[in-house]
Every structure is written in C-alpha cells, then in structure tokens.
Length: 330
Ligand code: ACO
Image (tube, rainbow, N blue to C red; front, top):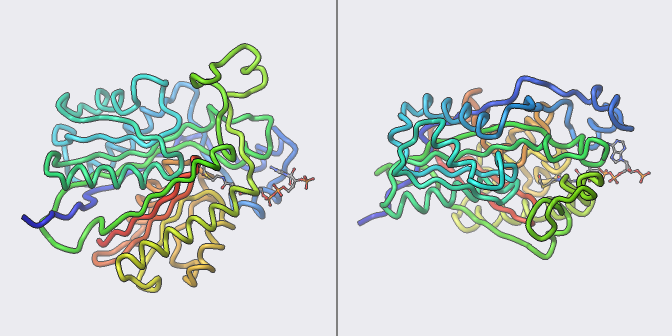
C-alpha cells in the first residue's frame, strides 16, 4: 500500500498582549535600541501576563489552527507540544492543553524538548506517527514563556527572547507529492554547554542560593552559538535540498527559526537566495524558541506569502545543540 502524504490542514498563532520595546529594556539594563536593532534586528517582543501559562497561549493558537483547518478537537488523536518552558515539570503541557481544548482522552499527548528546533522535531514525529496508520489527525503546538526563565539583569540574554505560541493541524492525504516531503534532524550534544539552564532540574535542584544567583535562568555563549547556528542551518538546508533533488531557487519561501536577523541574512548569502524569499518577524517577537517557526508559518500563510504548489523550507537551530529542516509542498 503506498504511503499517504501528511499535509498541514490549518495554522494558528497567538502572541500575548504586552509589548516590551527596546526602549523599555534600556530602562531595565545597560543597553540601547540601537545596539539591539543593529546586532539582532529585534525591535520589540511580547511578554505573557504573570497568570498566563504556556498552556493558555497554546490553547489560543490551537483553537485558531483548528478553526482554520475546519477540524474539531474531538477529531484529534495525537497532540505534541514543543516547549522548553512547560507550565510545570510534570505533567506535560500537552496533557493540560488536551483537557482545556477538549481533545479526546484516547489521544496520545506528550511534550517534546528540542529547544528552538522543537517544532521541526515535532512535525517530523507527528508525520511519522500519522503515516504509521495508527493516528489520523495531529495537533502540533510550539509554545514558550521564556520571560519566566530570563535573567532580567543579564543584558546579553534578556534582550533576545520573547513569549508566544504557534500551532498546526496535520492530517493525511492520498494526493502524492504534497505536504511534508522530508525532514533532516540532527544533534550535537557536545555543545550543550553553550545554551542552558543549569538549575531547577534533578542534577542541580533549585536552592535558595541558586535562586538568588538566578541559576534557573537561560545562560548563553552568544558568539559561539552564532557561528554554529549559521553553519548548522546552512548544512541542514543544503542536505535536505540535495536529498530531494531540489535547487535552492525552487524554494518560494524559507521560514527560518527567528533568533537573529544577522543569522538569517548569513543563511540567505550562503544559500544564494535573496532575503525576499525569507520570512522575517524577529523584529516583532524576538526569539520565541519552539514557537518561532509555527508563528512565522501562520503569519506567512495568512499574509498570502504561501500559495498552492509552493515549496517551503523550514530550518531551525537551538539549544542541545539541535538542528533540523523540513521541506513542504502546498
Ligand atoms: N546591550 C549593549 N551591549 C551589549 C549587550 C546589550 N544587550 N549585550 C552584550 N553587549 C556588549 C558585550 O558585553 C560586548 O561588550 P565588550 O566588547 O565590551 O565585551 C559587546 O556588546 C559585543 O558583544 P558580543 O557578544 O560580541 O556581540 P555580538 O555581536 O556577538 O552579538 C548576540 C551578541 C546578539 C547575542 C549574538 O552573538 C547572537 O545573536 N548570537 C546568537 C544567539 C542566538 O541566536 N541564540 C539562540 C539560538 S538557539 C535558540 O534560539 C534557543
């Protein structure tokens, strides 16, 4: 029996109301709008309300994706939430979202932690489970409340990240050569020390001292990450194009992880594809980790940047280090 295609039936996204501008940050730490804009391309980011949990944001994005797809929560039998900032360490954010959305109790629901590559990893996982024939409709959500794990006194990290959620509904199709054509995933755990949260896990549980030292916050070696991000994203993009016999100029739109405009510009140069073919919204949201690609994907679709027959390339890079790419025909 031929393998059925996995197709994106709908997308949705949600950004919290509160906008934190670069000017606002300049009142909090020793930085400036000029420094942040020229080094990163970020102008502002969204910050979730104190009582707004990742599951709340995930539900809002998921409802929009379900509406877009014309699919009821009752039809979902697989729910994957890509996040490094779940509501709590246990249970999974996916379980909380399942209950809030009204997804059936017979659905498989779990979180996936691959940091900023989490959405591409989750997409691949969902599509593999769907093509196994044992699941019919998947909801894949990327959501982060990074504002809760930022050290607001550390200017080298707090200016870079933001909160938000994006979601996709995925189903099966008998039409050949549409939907998710392929993925490439990779990991380099040797560089786990470049981007991490050291405390609050089981190796170093939170203590009064660790909280005072803000060791439950993100720490990053930005310069090293920058170089590795460009190299890994370029390589994974080239690999997937080669694997599927696609030339870079056949890609209508690249949706890269939104970490830094300069990283995106470097990939544009390496792939010899003009910046007009890259979707960019890092200026409005900063780096939302696992939420970044699904938010961008939703905005790209809703603004008419993706049309039937188009080839879209997703390319991601994040803590782990993890990286991955996905090729989608619409
Ligand atoms: N405001 C003002 N000055 C700052 C700030 C700030 N917010 N942050 C750092 N500086 C200073 C530094 O202290 C340094 O000063 P010094 O020269 O006196 O020591 C100077 O600016 C230059 O710092 P660099 O780190 O060299 O700046 P760089 O040009 O490398 O930009 C940045 C830093 C933006 C972090 C960049 O390295 C970067 O984007 N790296 C990748 C980060 C990333 O993408 N992380 C996430 C990927 S994975 C994921 O998404 C989870």
